Length: 444
Image 1 (cartoon, rainbow, N blue to C red):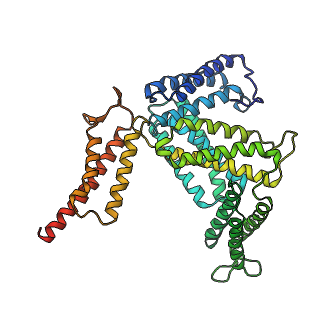
Image 2 (cartoon, rainbow, N blue to C red):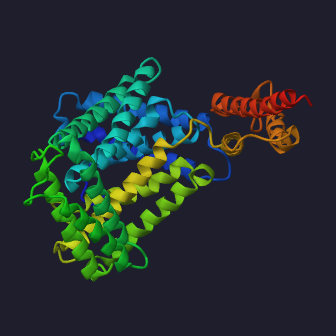
Image 3 (cartoon, rainbow, N blue to C red):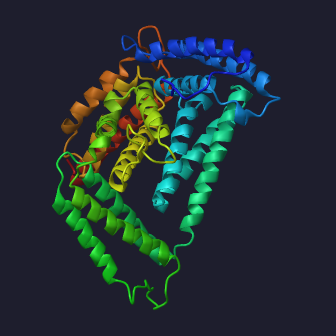
């Protein structure tokens, strides 16, 4: 699981901590892999406390040393433990507690690093991340009384580093005149669409040619090679846009030339990344019904190791030779896209235990159906509401004293499920009331 280049702890006092964390990580992995029963909070919390105890001991050893010089195998194993605990907290529905934010913080940092490296992104990309960081800060603020300061300091530091990276990205977009923002976003979209076409199972030249045509249309709107506003003035930040346009055009030419075929020296890496991307894409489409958040750990680790194996940012072959531009951009696109899927899956995670997810998902579907009926004009008679009412009643009857039990357990997320049930009842009541009101108006 670790990179072979990671050194062992040099301080002999750290070795026992490493051995203890390895045992804890094994226990976390076993818990993750056990699909025979639902994961419960009582399974996770003792292991979480074990890790926090090891962190406290480690910090006391390292407090007088330069932390920048101490990153070794122990730190990698500790990161694994925190990643697993974070995903386990999500799995049991404790999304709004500090440990749950760890995995999201590391994924956000990966995304920001890649956006900085790529040099192209839109304001919309940054808006979502900014909102996510704000939400994470709220979670940490609420957790000050219940979680170890060692964990909170670690998470606050990670969020602050993410904020610094985000601020730097925002600054680069401030150069754009308001009239250029939409054009810039269009070019970012074209560049990404070209990369997507480049990795399809069946390459379509016509798809890329259509993107080239869109680029030509954009080029027509320049005067003497300069982009001007409605008042005829040259717009600020046009060099950024022009550089991005050139990059888009050059990339479409390269993709058309290569026709989706990557340098055979990097075929193995390409196949691995494409499979990861495709699996995450499938998960994103069936997330509500098939995702156990802990399953993301294997994808995170595979991506991290491939990403970290680059030399000076370059992918290298077996002989140490760097990839050409086509292979480099193709592989980086797959990594970035995969991290983006993981990010989307993490922020879409519901604060409901996996034990209650089947009920929660049924209610989500029922709510969507009721809203569609409402938006389409309602029902003509109360009889049309019977299927919805019967389903609501069957779910409601599963409660005992207002709680949903799974065996003898009361899983996390009761509030979310009950609130959704109440909302469904309210929509159904509104639809029924509309029918009664219509009858009264007609004098029936």
